[in-house]
Length: 123
Image (cartoon, rainbow, N blue to C red; front, side):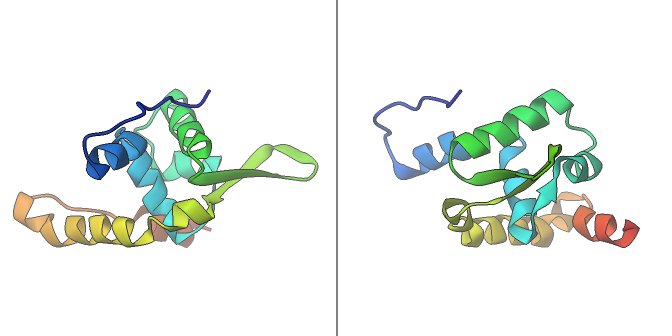
């Protein structure tokens, strides 16, 4: 079911955050900016997210028209998620968010990983 938004927002940033809000949506979009992923790959790179939450966030992004879910012919249970044209318009924003986190992590005393690189090295 598609999330209903108010008809009016006080500013564009408020609307953007309403669409992208939720702890995992932006993270999912950042991974999909790099490449299409299967659900099982999301499970591998997002182990702390429950199946229920991951499924809901992916569906929210599909409903918003930012992510496409495609299944292979004859393989009903294997879905591939990728950014739509609308989702690809977020590339600059997602790139800046990632870059900021990468540049500022040490100042906050945290380390950041590269799960997609780790996932690719396993295959």
